[in-house]
Length: 242
Image 1 (tube, rainbow, N blue to C red):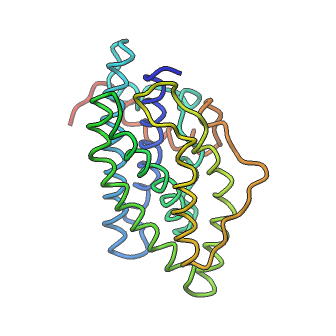
Image 2: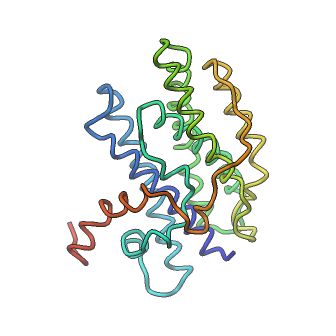
Image 3: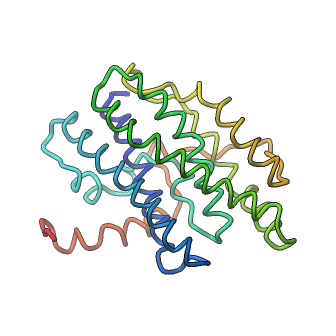
């Protein structure tokens, strides 16, 4: 796998998850979250923009960030299946964010030692944002998991539904010193999740049959619907500027 492909995978993760979280704008369960969730979405989409811009330069085919974000089909996306999972309820959303941020924070921390100056620059900003995302999502997982009978059950349902997708986080990536080794991050990720789960009265399940395929362009039904909405304006008005 080339550095271009590795950077493109990261960009797709951040854009797809950022769009998913942005769907909560105006629909969050309380005013504080109606501000926090779109801000986290903007963090992710901002990182995606930087990654797409760099991917376009690495590819050298004349495609810019908009081309890569809006003019590719579903099977060309290489995002994690976890990132494209639908919001379902609020418990699903905060758990999905915790799973992703608990992986990306140590990833960007490791990327600060990259041999690639552009990757180091992107990591320097993203690592701080991911630390906040872990704290924010983790607090909600604890609050819901150790809350009412209903909130605890919803959080358990979210763990059962989403943990199947976490194994894909640690699949080997680009064979280059510019990007961190994903497999080496699993112990750190598990330690973060266990720490939060202990306080949330949750158990980390053992997954017998993990769900994978996103890195090969094999996605769930929901991604196609999401891309149709996300890409509709750009495809209807190509080249338009705000």
